[in-house]
Image (cartoon, rainbow, N blue to C red; front, side, top):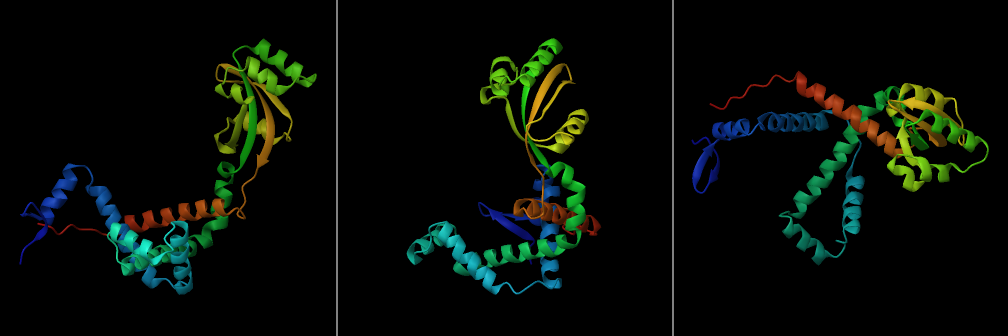
Length: 250
C-alpha cells in the first residue's frame, strides 16, 4: 500500500509532502479551514430537515441554461465538455448550491431579526451632497448664500475642494455608521432638503445637504440575503473552532 497522494512527472508525492508544501507556502491553514467547512456543511445538510428541493433544483438548472444561452442541447453539451463536466456532476453542483441556500436560511432565520437590529445603523444609508472648504469664514458665507436662495449645486462646483464638485457635490448613499458622530447626530434631526453645517471635521469646514434617507428593511431581499450570509458565516466559523482536529499524515 502506498501513501502517494498525487504524481508529478511520474514522481510520487505523499500526503505528508503535500501538507509540507502547503505549510511552506503559508496556505496550510486556509486549506484545512476549507476541508473543515466542507465537512461541517456535508454533515449539517444530512442532519438538518431541509425542504424537498427537487423542483427548485430543476428550475435552477433551467434558469442557468437560459441565463447563459445554453438552452440548445448541442450548445449545452459543448459547454459541459469545455468545463470538464458530465451532466450528473453539473446537476449535482446545482443541487448542492440549492441545498446550501436552504441550510443558510434555516440557520439564519431564528437570529435574523436580532441581527438586523444590531446591524441597522450600518445598513441605514443617507444620500448627501456637500461643500468642502478649508476656511470657516468662507463656509459661513456660503451657508448664508444658500439660505438666501443661492443654488447649492453652483456653489459646490465653484468653491468645494472635494472631487465630487464635478457632480454638484453629490456624495451619494453613505452608511450612517461611517459618519462622524457630530454629523450623524445633526443629520438624524434633519429632513430631506435641509442644510447641515457648517461643521468642522478634522481641519476642514463642510456644509451638507440631506437629499434622501434610505432606511434598511428586511423586506429588501438584498439586505436580507446579506444578513443571512453574515449569520451563516458566524455559525460556520464557530463550528470550525469547536472541532478537534489532528493531522495523521506521518
